[in-house]
Amino acid sequence: MNSLKVYYNNRLVGTIKKSDKLYFQYDEEWVKNGFSISPLSLPLKNELFVSDNNTFDGLFGVFADSLPDSWGKLLLTRYLKKNRPNDKIDEILFLSCIGKNGMGALEYRPEENNDDYKFEIDYDDIQREADYAIDGLDYDIDKLYKLGGSSGGARPKALVSIDGEKWIVKFQYKYDIKDAGLVEYEYALACKEIGINIPEVKLIKSNVSNGYFAIKRFDRSKDKKIHMISVAALLEADFNSSFLDYNDLFKITKFLTYNDYNDLNELFLRMCFNVYAHNLDDHIKNFSFIYDENLKRYRLSPAYDMTYSNTYYNEHTTTVNKKGKDILDDDLINVGIKAGLNEKECNDMLNKVKIVVSNNLKKYL
Image (cartoon, rainbow, N blue to C red; front, side):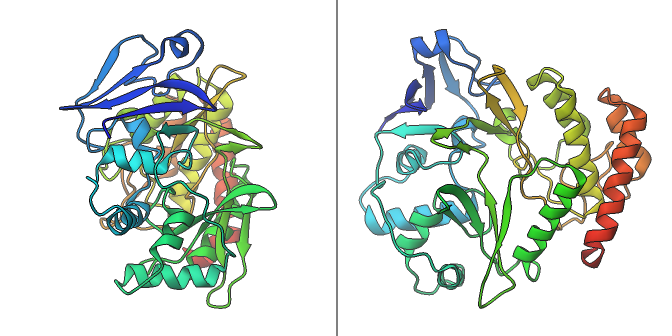
């Protein structure tokens, strides 16, 4: 397979082709009536774009966003080796397998291996199968892949329907902190109390743990899909590398959202929360933008992965005022002021974060 058509809510966006490199070209009609799916690397022009970046195995970042990260990619690779042993496994095949089931709104045709696969969901059973997979024991690869092969992140996940709406359910990974599901749930509730824009969340009961964290998908709205792009994809950059500062995130947000004051305040709250709630893994794939068709521009996406986390070097992945640790209130305020926010409002937001974190999350810190 050397080419794929890219669709957005049944509208042809363009074509990906592979020869010596990967190429992309927008459809002529999309150039007239669509929008840039990746404003920095794929501006809305009628020309052939060449991917010279090896960060995403040759893919443009926006298409790599449709693919799963480590856990999902592990499942997808094992699924293909079992079910398609003679096929060459590459990024084009991965995208065709994701088809219409990827994160965000983009779909890829022709599709492969996207037959319906329905069964009764037992969350504890999925946790056991995930544990078996991580430990290299026998497990049901078909079930795990069909449930979560297209979801992002490092932790085992399942994409499920709850009351007719799309949700992501996370499972415990053996290197997670104890009761990671309960922790992330309580962190999400703290975010809501602060006023951070985070989707609806649930804690699903379990007989083997304190529960599984579930979060409603913000890239779905009734029967419509919402286009999203991570900062990593936008910059065509490896999210595992620590090179960005929150000052840079504010500049990107100002550019993409046309200086939307609400989004800038929202980013400030998240920055403060990550510092005070010890979310050190605040890498650039954990910040995304969604395209608002009514406004005809991008907005900061709802928050996700807002939970307690460490890094190997015990510093924030995204620095604050060029500091990865020992971050002071003045550092946070200075970043906000540089972004054009009101100093008094920054102090008020910072104090609210500190109070809620202290009252709700102190036992984790």
